[in-house]
Image (cartoon, rainbow, N blue to C red):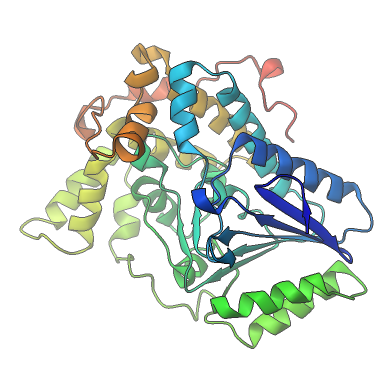
Length: 380
């Protein structure tokens, strides 16, 4: 296999471009160099008439598959934010551009989402023509855990999940198993993990007349081994509750919490109690920002959603309207508590969901750039 760098392996086998993320020690978390490498390879293959389709997979310490991508490199985010490193701006601009490229890729793009698929891993898989999950898949947009919001196009693809499950997934960061992902439209097929090597070998040794024929053959093979196929046949997710849509359709996080508090009264277990506990652990400010992001994203094109998210992430690290930068921002504090010091005791500002005001949230959605100077102005 050709090496583009030590973290992204790629080769062309017949008419198929094959990519393996190979940063297993970091669960294939995306670095800036990996984002640039993926963009370079995908752009080259998109322009190459001899490449008909592209497939991407992850790897773990034992070899291919077993882990897809755990997201962006949040340790780097923390270090860069504290150091005032300008490359942090480049990371988000280039990552979101990569997400747009994949969502609009002109050739079938196939994502083998085995193992962990979170954050940035969702950004490089949700635009795929065929999204494969397995019984080992652990999928989530967990950004509210670290005082961020579900970016990489999350405002676009989560808002299009059934009912108000997108709001629920965005705010709680709930982890989905493979069959759950089918139910909410974030995957196309759930296969046993031991079926993936044979499918990859089919790609590697393909001799088909067209990309459509290749994809049809893969889908035919998958149909013989799949664990679940359609939303109608998939079991109800373990996290689902009949109250979910009515609660997460409410206008504000404060109103959601009030209803959940009533539903959970006198209970220490159950959906309402667990959901309430999850929300109480997240940054109150970023919960409100994330809710507004999903609500706005539901009515935006992908390009406009990514431009909105680029504005949001700038404000996350430079929350000037609240006179916060560096260690004082929700995002840097959240990463510190979860990943750096690991004390799991973030000092959120404000501490309570009930104390978040619209004046704290609204400036996140004001672009810091004029339209003609926006770093993602080229997206259409």
